[in-house]
Image (cartoon, rainbow, N blue to C red; front, side):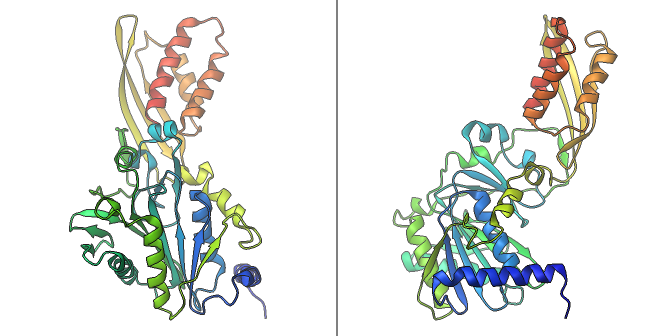
Length: 373
């Protein structure tokens, strides 16, 4: 019997998994709970992909528990320039990740729990998963007012969002993941999730703004550790299992063969930024130069994260047509990225080592371009 390359890959992955998973003992027959030792967003997202691609989810359900260092995670079809403050994130060292599932943008830090429910497509039920989380929370605090919405969010006291949902549906298997705010940095969260960029025209999936609140603000006992333990117990009850949580290292190639490659794909610029749906940038700037205000019109089309076309509107008596075209042509085909633009302009200026005037003008334009990236 001949198998397709995809089938062979999945079969090999399942064999490797069963061999590596022997360290877990007998494992749960139907429901397996894994908890990550890593706080790296790319490693944890890679585990989701690995389980989705290699485990037999027709026979076993998996709950994956994970937390990340400060990071912003956008949906599969979103535009990061529309969703978050990239300048602030670079200043604060906050990572940006694009997940495989759809949905909106979320902020992660160690005060935020991530829950991934992986199962067969037939058993996939987002609302049941959310009800499980609610039961787990009420086990800790019976009078907690938490409800699931039609958008598959969890609301606290009828108005504060404490959990958002996203999902990936395959041909036969699926996963649903959701966040749960326990003690996230409530001062930083709204700042990083507010885009400072205007002039962007995009058909990318927009996020729906919500008022959020931490569970610990209502009950200090609702820590990440306590909530994860309670969710694990509630999940185990579904399968009549003891609540055994297997702690795993997402960087362990013996446990997750090929995981490093998956992580590298997720932290690659062409995935994080390059998968952004095509968008246009139309912006007018004013530059003050020698007591004169100069209007600069910028029109760019961005495809796969690269500048597909670029038009700079500048007074010809301020910058010659030749110099303007030279700058435009250098931008064409480059990444829509601050460091790339700075490098290009710096390289161009080497052709004019003694022309201080053009150095000043091109650097001023460069500064404006960087401000919208």
